[in-house]
Amino acid sequence: MLVRVLLAAMLAGVLAGVFASGAQSLRVTPLILEAETYESGDSHGAAAHADGETAATGSGHEWAPDAGWERGFYTLIANIVVDVGFALLLTAAILVSGQAIALGSGLAWGLAGFLTFVLAPAVGLPPELPGMPAADLGARQAWWLATVIATGGGLALIALMRAPLSVAAGLVLIALPHLYGAPAPVEHETAVPAHLAAEFVVASLATAFAHWLFLGGVAGFLLERALRAEAAPAAKEASA
Amino acid sequence: MLARHHAATLAVAGSRRFTTAVFAAALGVFFVYFAAFSHSATLHNAAHDMRHAIATPCH
Image (cartoon, rainbow over all chains, first blue to last red; front, side, top):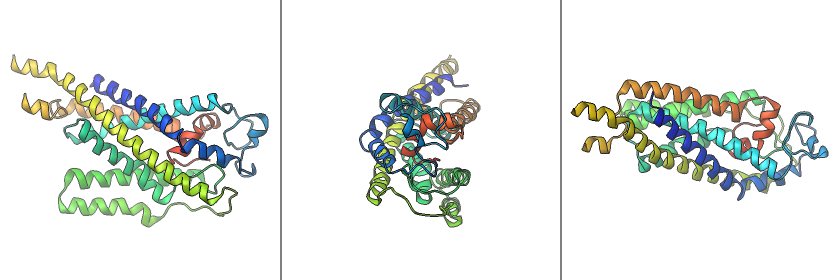
């Protein structure tokens, strides 16, 4: 087990999570808060608002962080946890690929992460504000997961195998979930104004793009050092 | 030396890379599921804004 590599991946995730929270606070989080003021509270809505709590839930009886610093703190923790996960997945892909890794190639891996985990799923399931209509949660999560696996696998076939047949298979794999189609909402009525929704799509995709480049670059930088440190004793033994 | 400088990943034996990759992937899936996909209401509420921000299915 390459412990230093795992620690480097997790550190990259923590740093990317902090970066994400900072970047989201510019435009993404204010739009989420503004959209919540339009939530009617009937579907999944913010019944919780009444008792001073914030996040939209089923009944409003579950715990939710208080508005302001507490909510921001939990968002920061959530960003860090999910980014440690993404950084570990990215690291697993880098290790399996056997490709050399450094800051520059890390940026390319970050771009691949953005395409896989954000842009491809967003084609079928665009970033949504609270209070917007959506299909069944389980169906959307399943489609999201299938799209991520197909896109990641497709990109690997294209960028790592590179034979004409692999590239063709990769393109088909990337297209498949979109040909099948994402789960669509039953009704499209929402109290959230269209300009907020449009702004949110651009803001969240742009933020995610910057975030994935940051994650990839930092992971590449740290992994190069960790891998060199892991390889050093082996190289010394070999030369002895 | 030159090869090691240019290919830090390749300098580590394939089997060790693979074991670490499997472990990292399993741990990574756990963290992403826990933060972004769990149906627990408490976890959902704590992670709500992040789930919307990164466009993972929410609600």
